[in-house]
Image 1 (cartoon, rainbow, N blue to C red):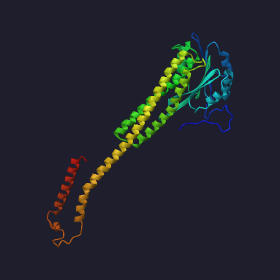
Image 2: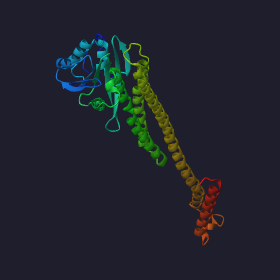
Image 3: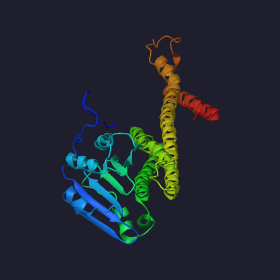
Image 4: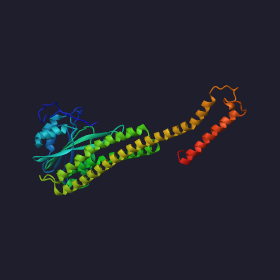
Length: 355
């Protein structure tokens, strides 16, 4: 089911409240770099971080965990982040989106992970993009999803060290979108397994697995579709926060998102087709069973008729009352006629293609 976080009706706007179940542990980290230097350190307080903040370089402030609302408020005050955007950071069940404020963008994205028992885990990633800074807020303080990007910055691979915070924001969004591909691959394998089971032996468990897959695809669609709006907005940036060169890379993210949506829609159509296949298989199997039972019943009808006649009470002294009862081979005659009738019916059914 879709999760919802909401405040009681009448709550003033921009009221900051930690989401239910948010971890109290918050990790505060600063990564600053340019083409020649790189700095990566964690801090206990925001004041310690500010002493290392360098406006001449690209500063990436990463906050892991949503338990410390006061810290988020201090970061917002220092970088003049809009209070409604900070409120959206704490609303971890909202739709991915991008909003332009004075001096910065606010981007809400999502990471997708395979969970336990064939379930999926979704984590909201909040990004504030300014002219010389990038602030990211991760939902789960116990899990860092951007370590690979820090490794790229540390080793100097790629263009990130020679670019601004807009390119770094692109790299983070690209990682968020690409996290959907392995999940889709797993769902595709699951759909193939269900298809093989349906062709061999349709069972009720197959229908349950199809419904579970359909539910997961709907959840992925809810995450993937809004990302196209995010990339469309950033590619048409008019604030100057996104460089022309970065917009070209964002176009590649847009293509990835379109590909993901196409795959999701294809899997949904395939799942609907497999559901029809299941219903058709069950109906065909039921028809086969009914056909066999009907043929067996028809075969026993003449036998039941004969057995009913010879099961009647007759006066054996009267020659007009069932004279066959006195035949020395009457029992064998009865079985011979019965087998002849059944054999003739079987031959007729095979000739008509009913058997």
